[in-house]
Image (cartoon, rainbow, N blue to C red; front, side, top):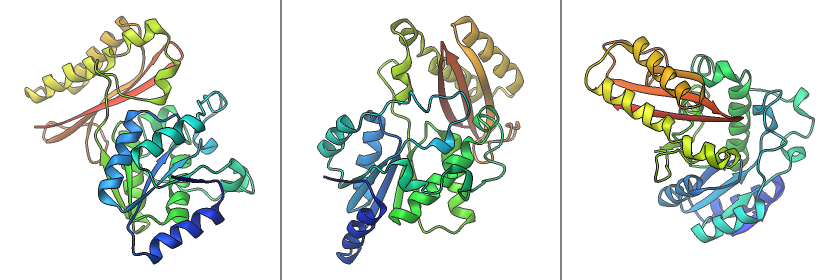
Length: 282
């Protein structure tokens, strides 16, 4: 596996892949890789001949007071993990390579509607940062396919709408959430949890599953289920940010006639913000 840090190097290597008629896959990440990320790489290797994984902690998607400075950066360990999986190329640019004129002068992409609510409400500007950097990575790598995890359900919806609206020639593949044995969704931020918090954390998925069971059984009391879930999470030591039952396609509040429903949840455990989701069909 090769590692490059500049756009010039990246484009030269990707051009050589193209000249050989190879299909190119992209896995965008912010590093601190875990088995969930590596599952994305494995899926990309199934769909493409060569895979470019990017590691870039994107300052544009972090708000004031968020964990940009403390976000884990583990490049050497990430290189080892990617090499063991057969990843072809690692693109790990510095901020100056991606935003040479600084964030204040950077063109930005806004994806309306699906960016609203949920994490979009809790983290203003977050999805603008996500959409902008993903579009830039698509232009840098020009992949045939790109793989994203469904744990960040709203993010995936934002990227899919952006690709559709801007006619970008990229096939976006979503991958199911990879979980620990106790149900906790794998996340780089899980490393922030104390030992005691880590024992509490799987309660988020248990509450999602319990609510999903009620929806599958036919309950349309969405507001009641949301309120009950927030109460349980609070009793389990969480500080709920949101717990929303939505139409899986629009991310708007679910209606009784909806067949595809997703439960979106975010909650703080100590200082760590955890997100998760569960989709069902009725």
